[in-house]
Length: 139
Image (cartoon, rainbow, N blue to C red; front, side, top):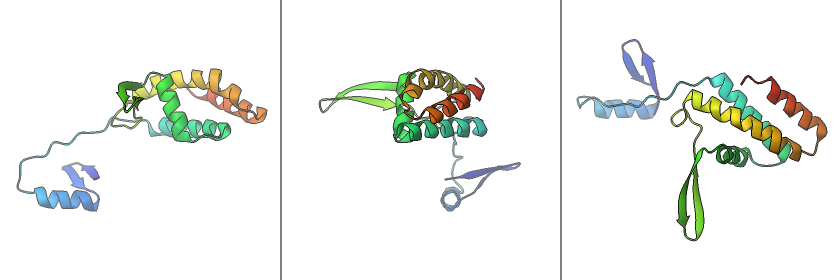
C-alpha cells in the first residue's frame, strides 16, 4: 500500500491504498509508521557494489549480502530448530535500518570485502577494478 505525502496530508497512491481509504472513512484515525530517511544514491551504490562482487565470485547477491550482514554482526542467533542452528539476518530496508546504521554496516563490509573476498576473485583485472571502486567510495 503506497501513500503520497501532500501539503494537506496523505493521499492514497495505489489501488490497495484507495480501497483501504474508502473502507476506513468515518472510522478512527489510522496510525502510520514512516520509513527511515535513506540516501538512495548511496544505497544504490552499495547494492551495485555488492552485486558486482557477487558476480565476480560467481555467487548470488542475496547470499553475499547475507554473508556480509553476518560478518558485520547484523544478525540474531535464534537457537536450534529441528536439529539446526537458526540465524535471522537483519534487513537493509528503510523500515529496519536507519541511514547511519547503513553507513556503519558499509564501512565494516568494505573492509571485509577488501581483506577476505577480493583475494578470492580469480580474474586479476576484475579484482583490481573492484578494489579501485571500493577505494573511491566515500566512508
